[in-house]
Length: 433
Ligand code: DLL
Image (cartoon, rainbow, N blue to C red; front, side, top):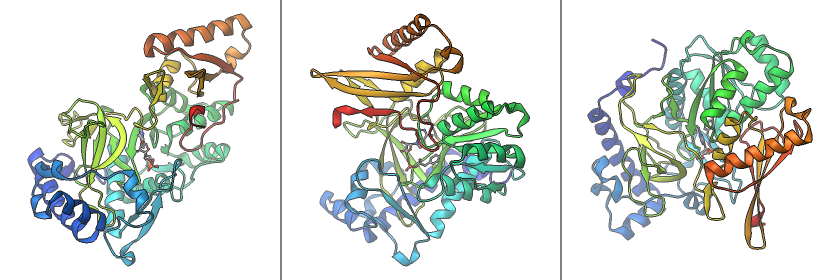
């Protein structure tokens, strides 16, 4: 059995898990009340006492926490331990507004590393593997998260970080990396570079990819698996809750197992806040039930997915979440139709296009417009103008029939869309400017 498989938790009965969760929830709520002024104030306003929370069934009595709460208390206002007890700080990229700063005690780092270790083992990683980490190192949690997880489960880490793609390929070849960890868009770029260098991906030792930090589709999975001759797994996480490893696929690839002894998930209706049952799509909410420094209560992730408690064929009993298809805040509303960039990606890949695209949303004469710029691949580039027009029409028709949205399609020269080494930026929304 590989290291860092923890069947006493990962395969525990639902009753055992509930007991652990209930006890940890009661303890963390008390800590929040005693040490975080914002929570004390909210509880007092609601007439709620920490003693009212005795089990997981009481969770819905608790208020939500939002990203705005973290911003309002920037940088360390929600921290529940003395500054001296902190072991590390990370931050989210903060494309809008202030950065979100998060902090960890040594125990929190251990919980996170255990989660990431379970994730790597769940994907089939073993202590014999060389894990090539191409997530960015730094305030972003990707690099150090996978790094600590890999060390925890006894593998050998290659801490490459992102960038210098040609060197990444050289290292994959020369060091014999077994596992690649990076964003799916960067994996695609690395795959493209492997092809351009005339390397047969099957000649690489690479076996497994652990990709996350942004939404990606099943079609994209197939493309990456082909380009790098590997099995590609989805890993999810967010800095506010820990980092990568909050959940991850197992070898069944049938949803991501949540490390629910540390991070308790719920799905809610984003408008009413009501809890939704298994199988229903809504906003993912997490309560950190094991953490000390930043024990967030019912944190609204804004990610859209659903949960299932059905036992997985891998034997794990932990709840699984579906691939988040996007965030409530990257959902575009174009002429009243809700569109996630991942849906556009699905349509393009289904048509055999490469997933190099950009969406430009604008408003002309009070009407929303959508232009989808799609990069041609090398084989199409030599085609006649007429056949390219046909391709544009085919894409426009497919978008119309699957998403019911009219878009202008513009084909661009190969390589004209900037490649991403981290999270890809696909949307330019000029309506807000
Ligand atoms: O992206 C942590 C991470 C690093 C996860 C490496 C996986 C791998 P943040 O920068 O705080 O943390 O961004 C978190 O990224 O709320 C989701 O919207 C999105 N996200 C993360 N993983 C996935 C995924 C890291 N597998 C935000 N699928 C989250 C879809 C994802 N979206």
